[in-house]
Image (cartoon, rainbow, N blue to C red; front, side):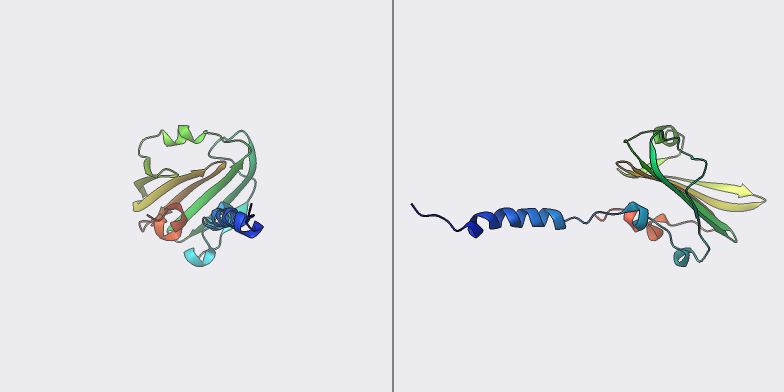
Length: 155
């Protein structure tokens, strides 16, 4: 009876394990989904205390980021819940929301404010217990794909 060396037995399992651990890099939405001051050329303010647009019941962590300059303003609400919740369904059931991919929905409108035309872009992104709701108002049409390409998985 011949015995195979232990490294020949364990190597295939070790190889599969290492490949599965390194083949897909996980996105950290708290860091990877942040518009920067350099991207937008404006001061961004942050707070953890704010009136929530989406009334989640088990919020573990939340953050509001907002900024404005000239004819541009935005805010983004970041949520991490203790349990997976679906409170956003009420928001997304309103008219005009379009699903871009399984995790991202957007709503675009044109608005007149003080006789000036604005583009309004709202977006909602969800992966598991993490949610991101954002609102952008600008005289120029906002391009979310350029600012946050992570929301658009490569095909």
